[in-house]
Image 1 (cartoon, helix red, strand yellow):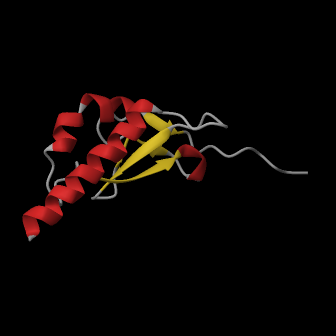
Image 2 (image 1 turned 30 degrees about the vertical axis):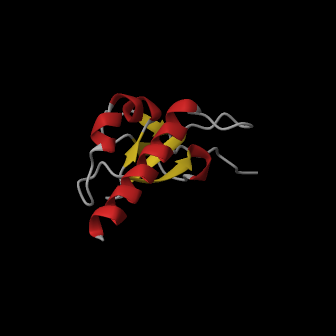
Length: 98
């Protein structure tokens, strides 16, 4: 039973990863998509593409299992790719003083 469940989770991880690779930016808005891993980490679309084999062979808790996809416009703070260290979201807010 665990093998079937794990296989489904890996298939979902691959499908989410492919959605980030095929369309790395949202429309409208052109916000970058972010792959969220099971340990709470984030991967940029370039690293998802480069590390797809690692994601496809991931197991629960290893930090490579993609469990969700988010977009940069949903982030208030700076977000960095946990693999390459690139800033995905700058996090600097505009000055809104009157």
